[in-house]
Amino acid sequence: MIDIKRRTPRFNVKFTLHSNDMQGTGVNLSQNGLGFLTNEEIIPAEAIPFDAEIKGFIFSTATYRIKGTARILYSRPTRYGEGLYYNGLEFIDLDPESRQNLFDLLTDIHSFSRNDMENLRSKTLADFVYYPSGDVFSKAEIFYGAMSRLVEQKYEMFSYYLNSTSRSTSTLRSRVTGKEKEMIMMGSNNYLGLTDHPDVKQAGIEALKTFGTGNGSGAMVGGTMIIHKQLEEELADFIGKEAVMLFNSGYSANIGAISGLMRPGDAIINDQYNHASINDGGLLSGARTLYFSHNSTKGLERVLRRAKLTYNGKMIVIDGVYSTDGSLAPLPEIVALAKRYQCRIMVDEAHGLGILGERGIGASEYFDCLDDVDMILGTLSKSLGSVGGFVAANREVIEYLRVYSRSYLFSTGFPPATAATVRAALSVMRSDNSLREQLEENIACFRKGLLERNLPTNESPSAIVPLFIPDMDTMLEFSSMLFEKGLFHNVMAYPAVPMGGSLLRFGIMATHTRDELDRALDILESVAKTVRL
Ligand SMILES: Cc1ncc(COP(=O)(O)O)c(C=O)c1O
Image (cartoon, rainbow, N blue to C red; front, side, top):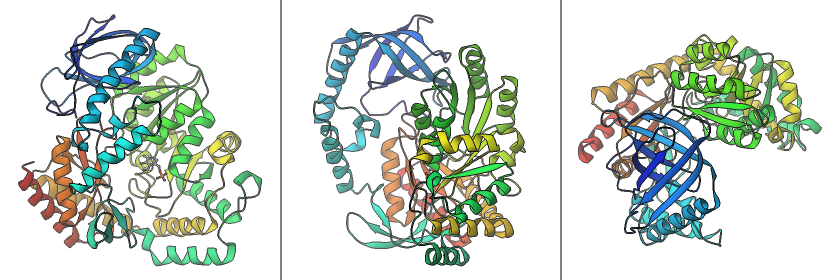
């Protein structure tokens, strides 16, 4: 998903990889790495000698030489043109002179960027991560200026507060004008609509009255209430694993499980699209994270082959359903590879739980792989309508993680009323299939509607439906027209999706009516005509 015509500053990077003697065009650069296009596929490697000459950036004619070792994160064909590959490269080690050259180059870029900060349209969020200044607040100042200008131009992607339950048509208040309006809600992960279910709300009220507002202390030192324990047992029974432990959020569960289990010398083998919390858990663990191209079992096997003798423990970590575009992981193939290379496997079911499989456990159940997946991660914040996360695995692993997951041990758990709402939501989910059936029907109807209108989406049974937009400008225009016409949605731009590509993400709910789905499709069709998608 790279946009060749992207107007963001581009770099003419003439680079030489000692192993391949390749040339290409740079598309992004930071102190951490470089994205670039090549005519040949580059084999992902852990540490390759890297020698780049970066020439003639924008107005400058200077040449910057950067030398050191780098890792190819991924290399995959672009959608545009035959034989063109998009590569992600991470610097591992640069010699001191190269570091200085890189710093000079980035200073050059940013001095240009600062003048060019009139609006965010020529930028991505990644452009504000580094800013060469002794004052660590400087980058916030330029970012704030750019965001404010974007809002002035009526691009309102982060500009609404919810002022009702997150229901199929919700009340949203504009941060800019303070005005409220009803919008069809397609920016929610409340897939089964359980945030507003009477039994779920009542359970929360009762628990609040009985147990009060909080736990008083951390989970291992007196802060686990019986109601938390009951929820753990019910979740373990539902998932079909020996034990479950609760975390404050799905984010915290990923951080805790991965950093609690993986150690320096181990390898975490990640799909490039994995959720940020998986990457962050890897960083915290000190283990090496190796990436493979999204859903590429060939890429995964290459990484596994290389990792076999180099690393101590190995674990593949994937999302069952990818949170940006709703694609499913090819789990049967991944499980077979995990077995062949004697590697553990963890699946993040944040967006599969409550939706996929016969009982609604997620992609692992949908593909009949539950027993082969060693560890399941779930959130309580999406289909279960509340907040929190959990990890399910065998008893030994869970009891080990209770002590070695720092986000569990050193943080107070969510309140008893939350445990009560999740228990009630789980009970509704397990006893009444009609919500899931309705959701399935709604997903199929919405996807079919997009395809009938020639709007670019993908095939997937997931409740996340993407609309692919070729570039940032079109996306901003498209998105702001949707908000104006009353269709609330999520905007996914770089770095949430690969450079240049953008997508709008629509979350389907069981409680969407046929009329709401039809109106949403009509709005999408009319906006697509206006912006000539
Ligand atoms: C795949 C995935 N994992 C984990 C999380 C984190 O979950 P939570 O929002 O409950 O912290 C998310 C949330 O968006 C997600 O999409």
